[in-house]
Length: 108
Length: 116
Image 1 (tube, rainbow over the protein chains, first blue to last red):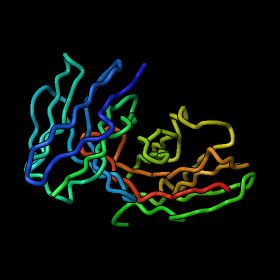
Image 2: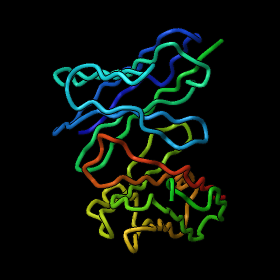
Image 3: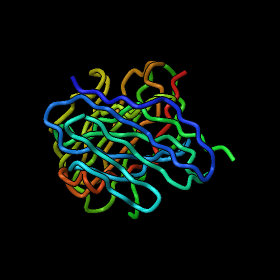
């Protein structure tokens, strides 16, 4: 079958670094995406990894290991506004399949 | 338009009534997707459109759910004889074309449906 697993909740301190892990199970894997969603808001695209390795976009980085069916999102220099839910997703037959999300709480 | 627009933003309906949810994608985006998000849960795929055709309806939960798209623009998701388990946020997203997963979907803010 197809599935993604993420921790349900992560807590970190402002200014710190946090890593949100995602493991997936699927056939025909093309790439792993990450989205951010604030409470009551629309999911917004953060990053996409098609190849193994690290992709960096400002304070956010995303990593993929295809051989391990594993990826993570790394958030550096955490800010209060980073408190949100983060979803990993893979493409399957022209649509995205999402994980259940990780709720990140940033404390002062 | 500049973004994906969904209406209404909130809808409260009585059990057994029909509801229509509307999505206006970004102009020129040929691919359109509907997802459902229950409270505190992930996004559940419902259906996608390429142009006006729907190659994949596999996520529609039952035959009470249907969707259409006209003029490669507006899409309507219809739920007939609503049930309490249909209560959720219904999200619409669009992308330039089907293959553009790598640059991400643009989501609307959703319609929060409450069936009482």
